[in-house]
Length: 127
Image 1 (cartoon, rainbow, N blue to C red):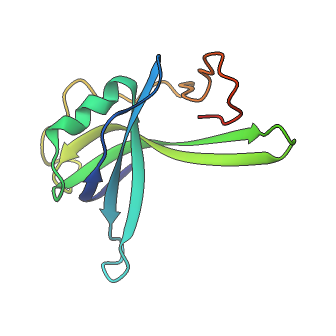
Image 2: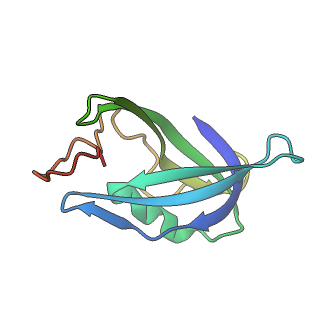
């Protein structure tokens, strides 16, 4: 999937565990300019670095995978989580404009499991 818009905010990389990191950013998506949407994406693992080449205010195209997880808490209540995992970005508002960010032009495998780390923590949250 892909979406075009303006970078509104880029957050620092967060080290979730010793084997997992993510970096979030917000894109203003204006399918209807009267009612813009502010959509938060995440880049995981080595793709966190792709945001280093971008600045707030730039028009970009983001290529991403839509991810969803099901999780049952300790009380047996089922929760659902969605994430938009960016795997490539390029400057400009069209998929033909600008150079793609280096070494990030192929999507990650669909079986990528960022919540599966666990790392032996007793925390009951899936992330």
